[in-house]
Length: 328
Image 1 (cartoon, helix red, strand yellow):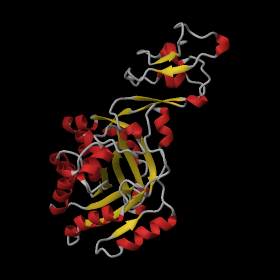
Image 2 (cartoon, rainbow, N blue to C red):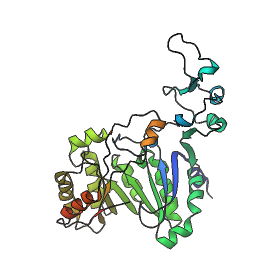
Image 3 (cartoon, rainbow, N blue to C red):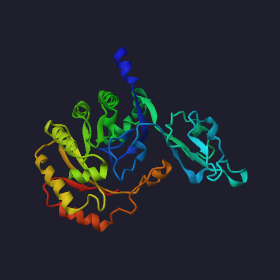
Image 4 (cartoon, rainbow, N blue to C red):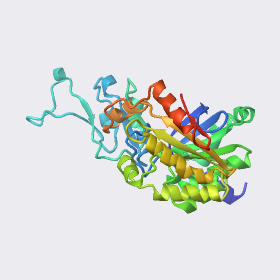
């Protein structure tokens, strides 16, 4: 192995999850690698632990027995006992002092608190992994990829937030004959996307809202760059499947869906454009917000009833574009 190759394989990225045996994020059986960090702030995000690049402490307060084991071992003093508001004193033992976290302090990822927690109420989100370490995980499931037509999908968070690592990992996967895909919001520098595209068999590309002003309200960014990048990828011959999350009352109106389909009509003659998946809202991930002391601003259940999905499927049939409502 050359020195250059060895150096590339030791390149690191911050990952927050690896999910094996997925069947929803590209063809066949797949391994999903979740990259930490995302430029968007979608109101319905189901992976809030992937938004920030830094390490984070997830805390299941309802399981905590307030033993205090985590307090002395934390080198940056994130953990503390709740002080009495009136006199600033620690509560007595009989008052059961409550364990709290200071979210203004950045976790350093040492995992000492995690290791001493008897009830496993604490978990540190984020792990530094080298390309070699990720490849070792990926290669465990090569037989499943080859027998099912599956492979590896890089997502997040947002995979393009750590582009150098992603490009080299994709390159190594293709060198091993493994099918590659990335899930992306498309909100990235075009140069990064085009570099990734050289080693990507399939883009799973989000359009969250066709109206740019509304897109900003829902995600914190406008969508002009997203649509421009999508156009470039398709016109340059890279294989793309568009995915549109459906959130009741936010982007599921007939007008919004139809305008999205009309926009995509111009790509239907491109063989590398594989159509659109509509992904109905689900409530998975809501509990993570509480564990991160983050506010989940959607207070209603925005899930769809079967008859509502039937109605959407009925009116999208009029469009000469391959469209499917994905029902999990």
